Amino acid sequence: MSDARAKFLTGSLFRHVTVMSLTSSVGLLAIFAVDFIDMIFIAMLGKAELAAAVGYAATILFFTTSFGIGLAIAAGALVARALGAGDAALAAERRTHSLLYGVLLSLGFAALTWVFLPQLVSLLGATGEVAELAVGYLRIVVPSLPLLVIGMMAGAILRAHGDARRSMMATIWGGVTNAVLDPVLIFGLGLDLTGAALASVAARVVIAGTAMVPIMRHYGGVGRPTAAGMLRDLVPLAAIGLPAILTQLATPAGQAIVTRAMAVYGEAAVAGMAITGRLSMLSFAVIFALSGAVGPILGQNFGARDFERVRAGFRAALLFTGIVVVTVSALLFVLRAPIAGLFAAQGITRELVYLFCGPLSLLFFFNGVLFVANAGFNNLGHPFWSTFLNWGRNTVGMLPLVWLGSATLGASGVLIGQAAAGVIFGLLAWGLARRVMQTPDEVPEGMASEYSEIGRQGRLMALLHLRR
Image (cartoon, rainbow, N blue to C red; front, side, top):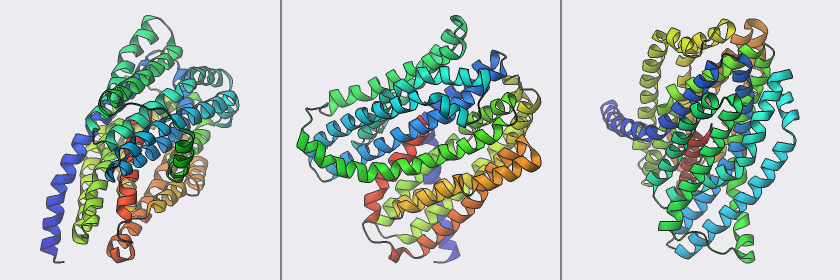
């Protein structure tokens, strides 16, 4: 392919990628903005231990949410396949059985997590009053996991029916609920961290309800489960759900490593980590949305066997990532003082916020590369490469770099080590993706249709529910 044609295709697809990513990011921005404001409210209480407790609790909740994401991926994929085959009856049965499995499994997982909360929080490095606050917060939120799983699975089922708008609105209404109740419960009723936990539970109730109502009204609702049908759907549900859960658990595993390393430097450091985590989600929401937007573009062109456009779509996504990261990083650098002031950040907390609003935010480009590459793997028939890269980055990549950063640069080094792992595995993902796209005939034809919906569901679910 000539350089001129390559540039033309990249430019054409760049506009497509831009429109898809910006429109997809609307729902994410709403959710991440609520989480950001939530942290501001907690910081306004003037107690570093409260923000630190939220940081520890968020890591545990990340694990429970990832479990639900895997179930949602499987439900959405199974229903989508049945609908694609024109079998509405099978789709209805799978909808019923998937939701029932989701409720039963999440009840068990929530109960197991609830029992061992003190040990889990201690494992992350929390001690004393901060540990008690984190456990108290989680005691309220964790039992609502089945509600969140219902909302996530129902949202995936809605998307399988092509009803992305109602799926997105369920999450937005949950975010609005959280945003309204946070100041009322935290400040109005003086409930502090308990108020924040209750607001999160209420948001989960709303997400579950507003996702299920359209299914009941427009898509046949939930029928009566049968033993034969439950057994029949267990194998495909597990075949998709287990790998999906394993893939999703990689990120909270990495976050647990970072949290444990940061705990050594005290409550203020953990609070700074929690703030930068929410700030990164809000600042780069459009990059998170990009992974869900570019996947279908790559998958559709792969399905059409138009490999030139597959490669051009990948290049366009990387170009978009670079432009967004540089622009956002410049804004963060200029606004770093007001941002730190929003959280009344002092000392090490302020240092970590300043560190992120500068060189570390620029390194987010490599996270974007990893997102885009994973979208490619999921849509080009190599879904387990995503699993390998996610776990590699968050274990063998994260552990030595975080340890080295901590040993040489203290709390700042923990975040630097985390970012360095993203750089290494982002570059590795870039190389592997180029190899896949340069040798497309090695990919079995039709594999994209098996995995494109699974990958898309997983990325979107992770983004919309990461902090819920």
